[in-house]
Each structure stands twice: as C-alpha cells, then as structure tokens.
Image (cartoon, rainbow, N blue to C red; front, side, top):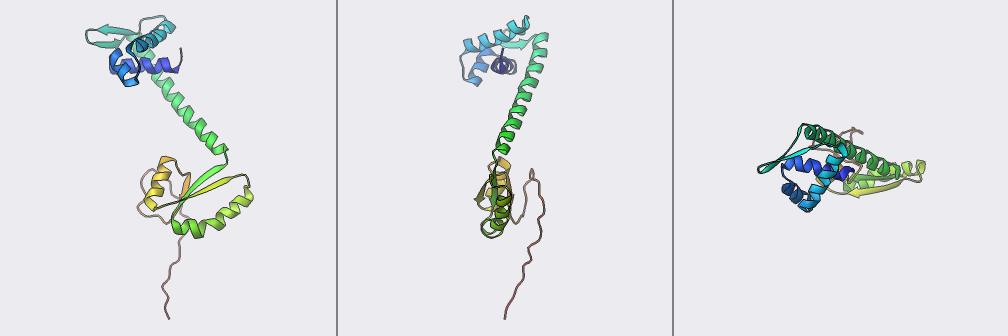
Length: 170
C-alpha cells in the first residue's frame, strides 16, 4: 500500500462513489476499485459498503479514512518543509524591490552581503509595489525591500528606517 492508494481511498469516501472519484482523479473506475481494494486487503477488513447509489465507509473504513487523511496531510507538510530546506540550502535568495530601492539603495547593501557570503546567489526582482507584494505572498520572492504602503495581510514587516525627505529651493 502506498500514498496513492490512500489518496484514491479518501477520494471514494469523500465522493461517496467510485465513478465520481474516478472522474475527479482522472483515472478509470476499475483503477479506483483496484486501488481501494489494496487498502482493504492491507487492513484485512471491508472498508467500503455499496448502498443503492452511493458508497459509504464502514466503521473500520471511517477510522482508516481519518488516519489516511492525517497521513496525507503530514506528507504534504513534510514535503513543503523539505522543499523549503532544499531552496534554503541552495544559497539563492530572491529579493523584490521597487525601481528606486533596487537601483540605488540595495546595491551597496547586497554588495556587502555578497562579500560575506560569496557563494550566495542574489537575484533582485524589480517591479511595482503590488507585484512585489504578490511575489512574496506567492513565494516567487523570498523577501522585499521597499517603501511600504497598504501592506496586505499575510506579510511580516520589519521597519528598516525612515527616509528623510526635504524640499529645498534657492
């Protein structure tokens, strides 16, 4: 039995139908039946009961379903952590910035960082503020440095300082 068998079994329970699960998973109905049977054989008991127009889990089936959902959730979380570690270990960082910040303020800072971490790959992604917010939220950028306004929820903010702006004339 493997994770795919558990995914198929859960799809049958959730759809209450082998054919609906097959449609959802884009595989044949006989393939769904065979994979659900693998789970039943693994546990040695009937897990699904066919009633009139729907398929329902037995008591043992409900227990296996809850366990399978937890296994699949844990696997997805673990895969995400491993992917993040792989990305972090690559020594690559993508920094989002607006034109002004990316062109004038970041280069000296990133130059100093590069001298301390010569193996690090730094990519500066220049864009409009809303694009940068979206990139960070989507994971396309690891972080961003910009003059912030209307920061969307879901982002952590660290104030780096205030830019002193003055008006001068002669």
